[in-house]
Image (tube, rainbow, N blue to C red; front, top):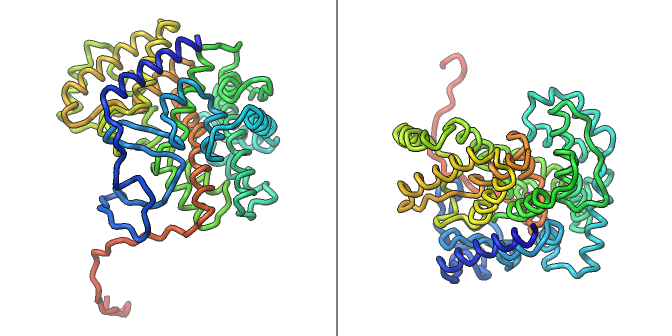
Length: 414
């Protein structure tokens, strides 16, 4: 099965490379010197806010690279642990380095009892899982004895802890929402397989475990997205890493960011059948309703992560035929949207097939964004740690449009 998955990813890579060229963007590569002149749009679009070696997104070409390594190669050959090491430490690990790093992650998976106590006291079925995750990570920070030590070494230690603990928190939330007791981590399993077992129970499944591993790799980093930038802004004030990651979680929760994968599933279920796709999209277009899972602030080409997850979703359907109906709705919707809007550079993004893939694995819809956080904490912390080494607190300006001189009126004259 692993060979089949690798074959599918490499075929997607070959197709992507045949459709694009290899020139990087001059405005966003190389080593610039501040101050930088650049065109800035609303929401800081186009602004250069940091210099990084962690990762690069070329939206015009449909590229995503971590430390110079193409996402297709990482998805085909790597693991989440190896990819996380790459992001944090700047290069792929040796066998001994990877073994040691895996041991560190396994050793930090356990949660203190008070985390479970707090989660059990929440209205866990009514609370959004991202809100529960945010609270749990904040609570961990309150009990960290060296939380005020913002040295790179200590923040790296805490980052590794969080990368290991967040899957356990997410799994506990998923189980409690179902009225079940949380399962302990299994030290014999890798990061992705352990997440699947803790969340879903059951026996190891080579297909599901490897697909979760690929999904975590694909979501681990993605440039200066909203949650990464939020994490970096908070950490630039020399706040603690727990607080910085809490801020990233809060940012990721939003439906315009990580929460989009949930909304894709709601849309697909609302459509219901292949025959309903065209009238549903026509109404959405006429009412200017946003069709979740399409378009991207950065990509003007096909999202490379969607290129991978699309055919892997098809593979899942081969083994889970009960999901075929929704998959056919998804592929028909892609055909209709791209047929109508492809000339406007509107293509599926990672959320379009990620949500379906998680559903086919057996993940509850509202738990999909927390899985995104399980992965993205690697990118959040890697970029925060990189920026910390030459830190300068973020302090942008706003263009003021109000009056400049207004006389103060005493209250009895107002």
